[in-house]
Image 1 (cartoon, rainbow, N blue to C red):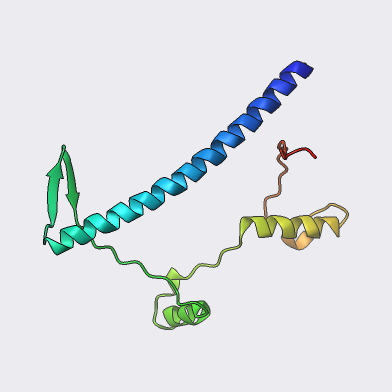
Image 2: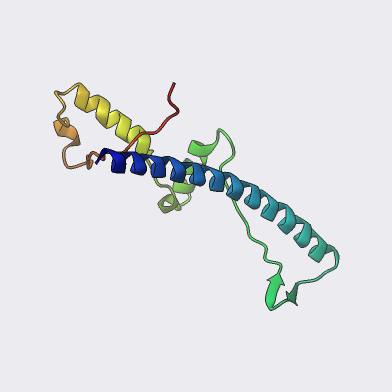
Length: 136
């Protein structure tokens, strides 16, 4: 039993290390993709090439428009959208980790019970996980 537990612990540590390495590799690859995509799109624009086939793959220019709120103007944007009839675009969210911490705090102040005003408004469950950190 103990031997199996140690084997599982070793495997968990190994998998977490693999995950960390692959996340770092993914970050590097995503950066390279972005750099090459910018260079290729610039070259295609400069040569006025809308699209081309290469080794059975079609490459084409595709302009996308992205938007985000100006820093410090989020609430003003929300109000402007609502005022102009586009309030359905505005959604309120609560960060899951912040909500969990808040609920834990409320329960600790209420004899480990969920306050009545939160009953039926939040789902609360516990999940047991194995924490891993470097031993001192």
